[in-house]
Image (cartoon, rainbow, N blue to C red; front, side, top):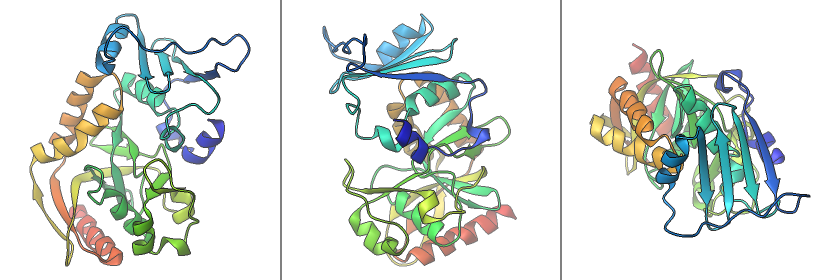
Length: 298
């Protein structure tokens, strides 16, 4: 877990929780550490567990396939991750290590981890939201290759105190073999063994050493769609933006569901939304986004 954190986490003071958070990672092979309890006695419902524990000042998440537990004391800002063994964790955990603890810590501050991609330049940016396969990651990669910056492709930290600002937390990028070929990534990064999604995993630093922005003032939400011909950008409704942004973030971030929905509703209300129908040429896509950012800045 420490190695994964060293690779995936972006050292950004802006993304640090306001107060230190301590997380202890334990497994049943350690001396005096008990085996994690399995879930029994009924169907596991994540939001119901969170609601019940919240009354005691706790949050918890349980991945029942592996008896993988994460428990967090909100007031003490201390968490425990308990596993059956040192490598018995969900396959997505190394890409965004300790994500759930960060989510709980940020939520206490009124900030949120959003499941979205970002691109920008000169501190101004856009947020890309959509289901898997919509072209979000490919768009972020195309932008990074052609000189744009990003604060993340999978999870980014949002603050809505003064406009909508996104900060980097994780540097992880992922792309399938077909995308590697289409984007010409072999000339830039080394292919790793395929992960649980059938994708190669690497970091923004590897692809574009100067590609991580310290922050991006988000000016719009873009909803990517894979298309043909030239890239075009058209208005989208606030409802479409909320449905693209909120469900995956709320599903993947246990607890805080009601406050999370209110948070993302405020994000969508503050920003214009657009469909971006993606062309097939990465350079052309990046150029269209650059022009869009120029128009927004005016």
